[in-house]
Length: 412
Image 1 (cartoon, rainbow, N blue to C red):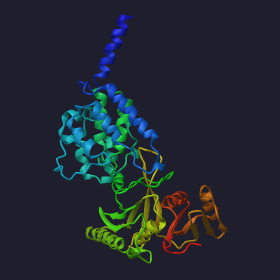
Image 2 (image 1 turned 90 degrees about the vertical axis):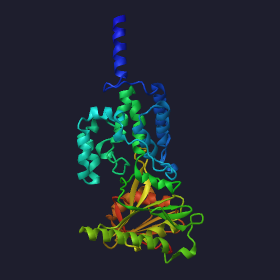
Image 3 (image 1 turned 60 degrees about the vertical axis):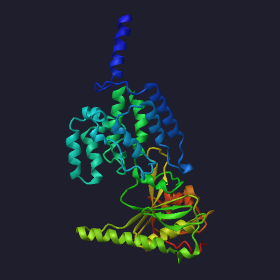
Image 4 (image 1 turned 180 degrees about the horizontal axis):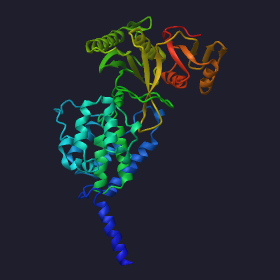
């Protein structure tokens, strides 16, 4: 019996010394497990209805406490890639040792993917949207199991995802149980989504049950309780979420209109100079759920008049590792055959079959009975942005808004 126990102890020691023959022992494994449990608890407790971004940095804090001698190549990644990002002014842009210059940090990943250098070198010739998938396949990231190929977002600050996978493999090599390393690294990877930077100007976003993955190729306009921002520039001040009369006329916001027209012109000029067909201008609105349609609708109406053919809206889905989603709000198309009038208390749907007043959870079925199709959307000015998002969630896949009424229009 003693010899069997001794053999098991040797096997355990060998396993803890790292899956790739590393020396192990740099991290406090008990502290690392506590950090993983704390991170799991935070992710489980997060609710999209609260409107805030998940606290991804709880994993960073726990990891640093458990691994005070973490390789330098991971330090700048953890500090400057995981949302919310620190203010870089005054840092002198000294971001520390890049992962590529830290052989100890990369050692387990290179063992897992011997052709790593060649694969990384080949990515420069690929379109940005293909690089993550190419590395995922070439280095068998599916076998690691942090994310599936379809759920690794293009919007990661590390689009190839190899920083997070390198960190996971290094932790396991140092002796961490795979489930512990996974519990820490998955939120860290999720937190590198660059679209989460919308929270730099916003305290909250509306919640939605479902939506599409966001894209970093759309201009976003952020509407907070104190102002409207685009391209990191404050365009309009708001007083408790309301526009001053002088800032808008006929539903249009002058300063926002001018900026958005400039962006449309830049996009079209760039496409023309490169010989490509101009893409249809797209915009995403990120707005506080407490704002009234009188404010957010004015931004959407202005974007439409400025030449944007697609208007989407950001919302938070229930998944803390993929919380940010987009919902279609407007897309140019054929003349409307449906009309939906929305107030804070009611929904009125008009179609060839007549008029109905469905509850929110029955709206999709009512649209299907109408046969779906293009729609005109009218919203009462005092309707909350959260309610508009809830309706947009039900519209997706059942009807497309092709006409937005002015937010100043009287809704009956």
